[in-house]
Length: 466
Image 1 (cartoon, rainbow, N blue to C red):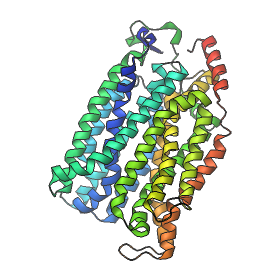
Image 2 (image 1 turned 60 degrees about the horizontal axis):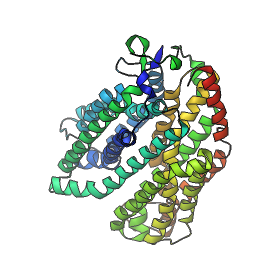
Image 3 (image 1 turned 120 degrees about the vertical axis):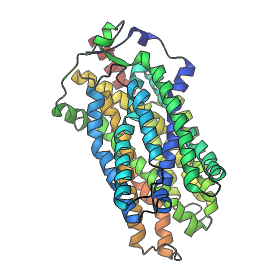
């Protein structure tokens, strides 16, 4: 059986709440380089063709999605001697960071060797690195049984992650130019390694804070808390199907988060084209992202007090609706003007910050709900859906953007026609905004209200699960 130690009774200090989430900031800065620089590195530094680059990235993304069910099973069933979840932060996260750095070493060899090297590291990093975020989120229900504290933790986590995006926008390009001195490959590698060191330090510290609250096998646990003992179950395929497809709350929240991730990825990928062809000012792109990230930072910070007042379900529905409205308004307000797109999408990103803070807490509720109805703790399995939505969105984003631009005859380096400009506008407004509007309607049917969760937690206390 798995159990918490007696030390799990101690409430977290305020400083520990912030420091536990600090790893998210460094990891966000690290992954942002991968998301924005990876293709450029392959095509312009290693000098791989766009076809080979596409093969490596698409195979890697497909593998990351295919690996998710296996990851969730491992997180659910495996209990390490050093802690069920903190082991991943203490051991797996540093390994993943080193693998990520090796991916940005310029290997000049035959094409076959290059493909084996970069694709192999890509796949290995997808396996090892995928555990970090899910393990940290899976720890949160163990840090406190109080719903307000859980929500506060997720709000702090999102706020710090968004602050990492702001720092990334402010520092990265400047540091790359300063360090690289004309060598972009060197500049990005050194900056990536610097962010990696921060990520390793902060994740190890998060593991230190979470260690007293983690789950341990009884054989290795000291001063085990009797009331939270959990018999080790054999999880069948039917159990996983019931926890996912038989769980309306999980499906509704996951659908909404996929739409939100898709919307974010679409407009970020298309904004470069919009600035170049429609606004005619590429230099404003960095300022646009800075405005959006700052707006999201404010939204993340305000999510906790707002959700306490109106409830997580209402706050999350408001987040989807506000983000959708901001994107759709960009089609009508200030078209072709920097202030217009910054205002509309900036407002949308403010509301997006509310959802970023709430989702982990809502997945915790879903895990509690399923534990109460089935008697099986599957929080880690439920939490994997929080990361899966970004993987799915990333996989299809490039295809959607390229397909839409290709349908109106876009050719790089040539003047944009009115049809191309209109499509670029739609990619930054209606195309990502309409699915979010659908997600808003779907979220109205999310069944786990605050009142429902109070009933669930009361039943769990009667059963000795809390």
